[in-house]
Length: 321
Ligand code: ADE
Image (cartoon, rainbow, N blue to C red; front, side, top):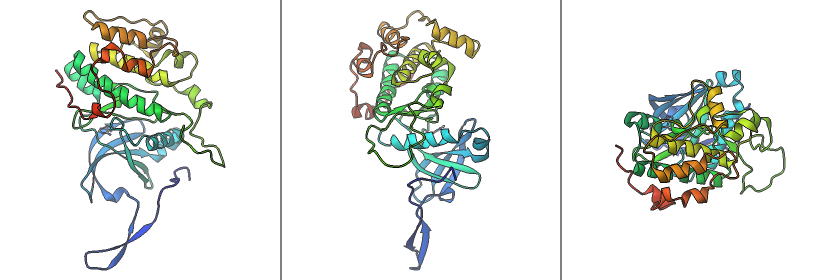
């Protein structure tokens, strides 16, 4: 019952087959419409598989979630958040797009954009550090995608280089919205009926969720409350990591990492570019209200020369070295 697809067009359509005979075909895509290939990634509740639409031959990444496991671990709400969030974020090249959802007895399926070059973290680990030009390009694409999701009322809450994927053009695709926070839809028409349980500004999920230790903002640790600026803290951590090869706050365990975050205990390695240092110092600020805003980041000297908006996504990615 929990998995019922609200608002989805479910039904059959009459088509004429090759012999001219009318046949009934399901309108909705299902498991049988795809051929599945290799495993692209594995999470605690899901596996991502490469898949091809049998009719169009278009390639996708299909996230397969195990229903029994999700029910047992009480994650139903998060699964719905991911779907509802992705359904709000359909018009940006920097965000993995959700095309279809369906299910069978055992699993839920999310059909997503495939990002064939995998995680930004993997690329970073392979080459060690990014130069200023690559950091500016990837930083700008990540920021443009964050700006779009914030404009649509979505806070990601777990931004990190593992959740930044790279497509065949080496352009950014942000993924993993299972722990996102949906703000009240700024475009929503008020409707009658029961409140939508996923749109919290006030419920207990906000108080129980903490993202990945190294990128967690101090306000999440102290007030348990994420805001748009929490994603910009994580963005500051990512910029630092691209240039230095490691996140600014890293310790032997989560507790010690949290202590470093709360103590703003980090240092810049020698040779860290001065403009980038200034940007990171203005992002890794405890008070979210005093952290650099989206517009100020875009206008910061580190991003001098960047053309924001659509042209950023028509640009050729710089060569990594
Ligand atoms: N791993 C997880 N999600 C992926 C995606 N959409 N494309 C490629 N690899 C992935």
